[in-house]
Amino acid sequence: MSSFNKVLMMGNLTRDPQLTYTPGGTAVVDFGLATNRKFKKQDGSAGEEVCFVDVRAFGKTAETINKYFTKGKPIFLEGRLSFDSWTGKDNKKHSKHRITMESFQFLPDGGRREPGQDRDEPRGNPPSGRVDDPGYDRNRDCGDEGQSIPDQDIPF
Image (tube, rainbow, N blue to C red; front, top):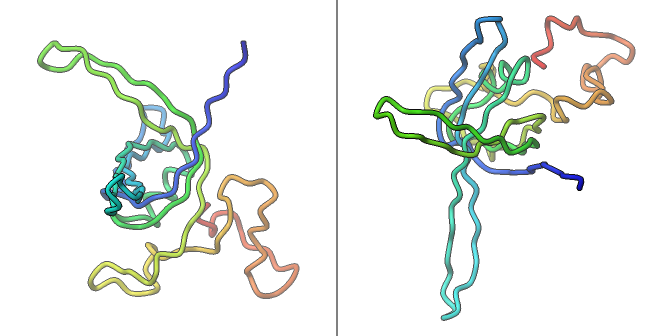
């Protein structure tokens, strides 16, 4: 029997990304994501349900998330569900599902900014596009046609 594990979510970060590195030097970022669902209850009143999910990303994607995102920023992401289990300090078994992010897209944030944050600070949005998409033309928004940007100057 075949299986399929794909998650698409759009929501807002519930906390600032936390960047760490593995002993081998791979970047790892963890953050929380909240999604809202509005619905009409049986009695006709409005209802709302919020879903909170932990997300983890690796490599350049992790560094990009850490550089450009803060609590409250919207994101559209694609990934897969992962299951983690561990024994806590209390010797009890714990487990949870999390999304392991494979790609994401920047979303407009409606002009919301952190207090005191300038438009030119790195937490702004770079040109939109799928970050992992090999067909994404990074030079499309550069102005002069044919001019290329050195890879080390591109945040993703």
